Structures are given as C-alpha cells and as structure tokens.
Image (cartoon, rainbow, N blue to C red; front, side, top):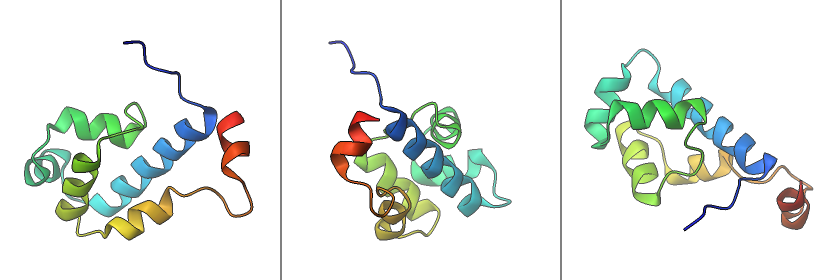
Amino acid sequence: MVRTPLTPWERERGERFGALLREARGERSMVEVAAVAGISAETLRKIETGRAPTPSFFTIAALAYALDLSLDELAGACALPEGEGEDEALSA
C-alpha cells in the first residue's frame, strides 16, 4: 500500500502538535514521558519533531495521559486556523 503524501497543512499540523508536546513535557526527559505513555522514546522524538505527523489515536491518548493534557486541548491545538475551510487546507 502506497501512502498518500501529506499536504503542507498536514505537515504544519504535525509540527504544531510536536511543539505542544515538547512544551508540555517541559524538563521531563523523552524517555520518562515515553515510558509512561507506553511508546518508545524514538516514536516520541519523531512525533515531537514532526517526522511522524499523524500518530494513531491511541498514541495521542497515551501521550495526553502521560503529559496531563486533555484530548480537547490537543485537538484544539491541531484544528484548522479560524476562517480556513477544510477544502482550502486540503488543497494547499
């Protein structure tokens, strides 16, 4: 199966998500947070740097738990910019 390339907006969303995770992690190490979330430190590194911009729901939920974030906060940080329609973002 060939994966469809990500749009520029999807890549930007992944970068915003990663930045939010880095900020929430604060002084805690990647290894510590990854262990609590039940994922590898390398997976967390890829998500934080935007190299894995579309993590699975269960990975996101585990990270939210490990970082004491709500799924609403995470979804809000990754939503379309106000006034931008989905069709516009997908065709960017």
